[in-house]
Amino acid sequence: MSDTLKIGLIVGATRQGRFADVVLKWFQNKTADRSGFDFDVIDLRDYDLPHFDEEMAPAYSEPSSGTAGRWNDLLKEYDGFIVLTPEYNHSIPGVLKNAFDYAFTGWRRKPLGIVGYGPSGAMRAAEHLRVIAINFGMVPVRGAVHIAGADFFANMTDRDADGFPEHLDPTIDELLGDMEFWGNLTKPALANA
Ligand SMILES: Cc1cc2nc3c(=O)[nH]c(=O)nc-3n(C[C@H](O)[C@H](O)[C@H](O)COP(=O)(O)O)c2cc1C
Image (cartoon, rainbow, N blue to C red; front, side, top):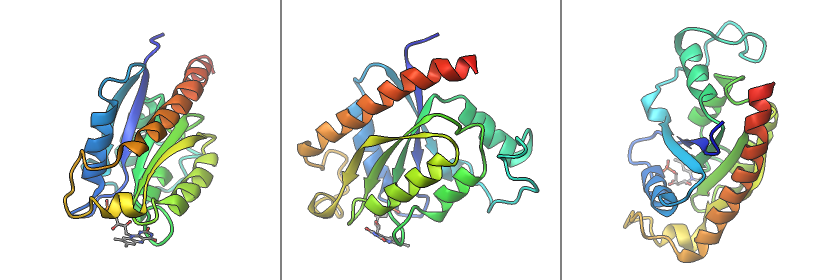
């Protein structure tokens, strides 16, 4: 089994003009030389999931076809996920919650990391997401990136992918350290389950 963890970078905002793209590029630049991970972008814009419309909850009946089946099958390819999320009205964007609702086994028992951004750094959104993740038996890790307050506002207009301060770098290391620790435990365990 490969030592590399295949991690889906989920872009959790889809609105036109989203700031998410700046954060994504920054995170990709910062992690480009990082060994131990194979990152893929999972942009919710590309999946166009309708509002949840399945007859059964994916937790009770694994979807095998259609929108839900394809989405769950995609998630099953990954050893863990890092979600880039803003905060919308003190929680995660509805489109992101919908994406979680649409699957179950694809998320199950995998580590979940968070990169939050916005005026509040998406602190409350991150806490909500951790609680949601528990219902999938995921491991929401402690290490997290929060681009908040002045760090966010200073780059809000420039939208420069290199425009965030270096003091955020150690938070990326903490996040990835936790993802590596848990991912290396859950990956073989899931393979043997
Ligand atoms: C509908 C909506 C609700 C928002 N609510 C919050 C909030 O509760 N807390 C916060 O810090 N920022 C809030 N914001 C500001 C966003 O954090 C900021 O606009 C950020 O850029 C959104 O990410 P996006 O541009 O990738 O969509 C909100 C923005 C929108 C569009």
